Length: 235
Image (cartoon, rainbow, N blue to C red; front, side, top):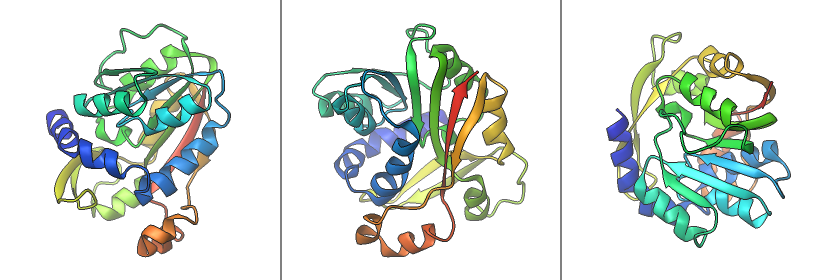
């Protein structure tokens, strides 16, 4: 599964980077709601876990933060370096593995946007996020909403974590993307059982700009969420 996901993102990297500014689900649904939870970042140290082509990092760096980012895709990491003109620190790393190069209590904020659904087990990542965060540091994640996924994948096993795949067509060609679907409790308990308490939870709506690019999904997302955003604080 991991190698399939890595290979897919290597294949997608160029088109993903080219579209990231205005692709509706990223630019006008995920990012505004994630950034709302993060708030002011000037002077802070931020870990961008699964950074993709570095768009979040670009925003944080422009606002005066110090940013470290990693991704499983080498091409995504290279694009993040190029986008940010080799400011910040970016490296290739698998989110399922210990972040051995990162020191304890070295970050004010950890951001992990739309990546956790690629992990079968969240616990190791949560333990590492807790380890590298300073006391009372914030973890902000966005994920695919478990209720949306249950319906979308026509699951018959709500309480299980199960491997699923979807066909994506928004990046210029049709591709198969593998991930893991899970119940709501498997989105909350790995966080609260590994050093955090939930501070805020958002079932987001798209911002108005979304409608210009995708009217159908704009209407759908104002009726039922596809994503879930969580802010957790290190205890």
